[in-house]
Length: 178
Image (cartoon, rainbow, N blue to C red; front, side, top):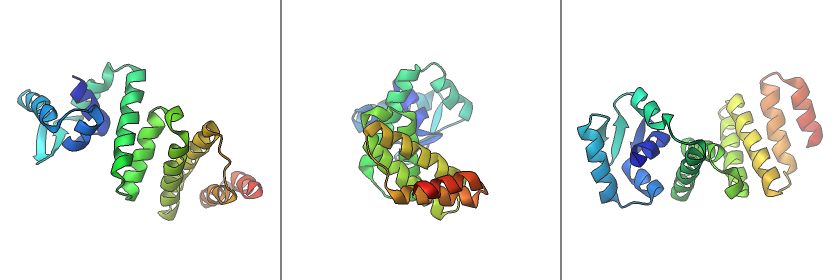
């Protein structure tokens, strides 16, 4: 059950190696557990080393009874595992930030700040201003929790995102802070 819970946190499609790393199990142990789930028709193999849930409702059921604290721990482990892989792609940076946001922010707030800021900057470059502001807010919370001072250019990025969305008061406030 724990394997499916962890897989469900990874998403509708998941990488077996990342699942093993997140669980702290060998690839063989995870492969064995996944073979049981395949036989039960809960998941199917997409390609070697990758699986997906046959229906999102199965994924949702796998998460339904997971304790909130346990779910935070799983998200934290997933975020840390993805962060160690460090592909540097925008999509992966966003995934790391999202898992950290859903995890235990207090464990590594300064790292969360760095990742969330990078995700926010990436979203800003792509003109996804709403996402940029969500990531910047996470970066702000993490910096505060870690006792870090935000640099002036952080507020410029926040101001730019607000300006693009037409939130002139918020934009002005951020620019004044910078």
